[in-house]
Length: 307
Image 1 (cartoon, rainbow, N blue to C red):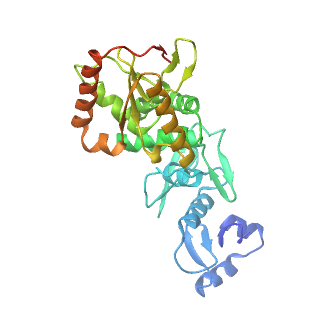
Image 2 (image 1 turned 90 degrees about the vertical axis):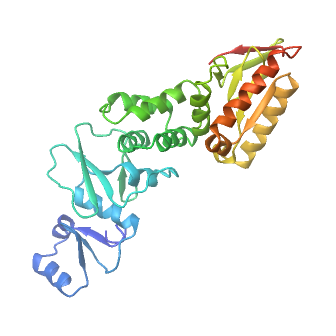
Image 3 (image 1 turned 30 degrees about the horizontal axis):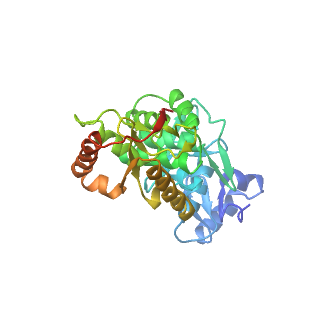
């Protein structure tokens, strides 16, 4: 048990294994074991690793406890997980376990039916992790990043997020609701969301379609650009390896751009860094291209089907 729990053990497990209180006190007194949380002991000295802290927190919380928020996102493999020094666990609402040490305890009346186990770690589902982390986050960019990674990396679907969001308390979910709505309407990355918000403020540009279905007049399917102004055949692409999950995906993106150009569209390319560092220049660039296309002829023969 100590090996599978990385040298950590709970008092209830010691009792079940026949270890008496006097034996426990002797091991603690001699320094062979150390108390890390109330009722949780390490069979070694020295600092706990983040993984061991997570195990200790779950042993402290009891058999129904699950990791939540940042600690859970890390276990699921999220790169956008917020950094926290504490370990957060969620327990049933009737649990009397208080927050202590490096452990922060959250209570719920809705046990997660989609929670998962990774070895000794019990973790709430990715969709609930994103929802709970977003409710504690004051940075809308990070919330959007977590939503984008959840969907793009297939941790969960946007429908999973929407279902969990509908069941969660509304307090603290404004940023998350906005991010989920963007994904549901076709904005698939953090940078696309930033671009959409900026261009929506323009008094010159018509409404841009996001991730539309495009076809030639003979019905040949064309790649779907990030943004599209159908009247003038102007496509917007946000190009970044960090938003396309592999070098192969990057090459496919370049081929998609070439096909749009062959069909008569004008494709504008922007990096997330350009949009973030100089939003006014980004909007002005799109506006100038739009004005230039208004007088251009012939117009591209491309049919548009909003998603």
